[in-house]
Image 1 (cartoon, rainbow, N blue to C red):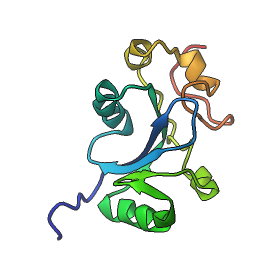
Image 2 (image 1 turned 135 degrees about the vertical axis):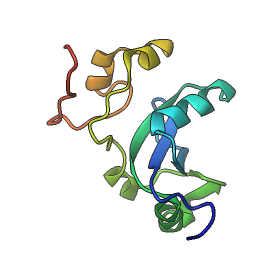
Image 3 (image 1 turned 180 degrees about the vertical axis):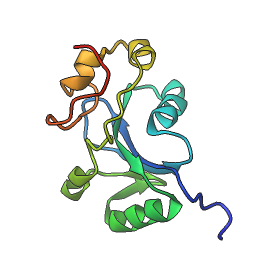
Length: 129
């Protein structure tokens, strides 16, 4: 086993709300939402989780390699249409209401894609309309 390579974790895509560029592609043992809340306090603009799914550091490196021509700085990349296959992928995870509310969002806004996209054919489990 290589040190520093988690066996399980999350690949996440974070960007400024309402924009496509730049996009941070990262990996963490924590959830994408937890990483978003880590970054938001130090960022002068509102951020959103644009996508997240199970993965590890090897997957992150593969994505960094795939989009290397679009690298802006570190783990931040200029948008590329091939990123669309990863954006809006959330595995059915609904952010908790307290997280959404701290940024002035609601679960209804989330479902409508006004905060972060979710496939229309996928209804959040256990949530009221």
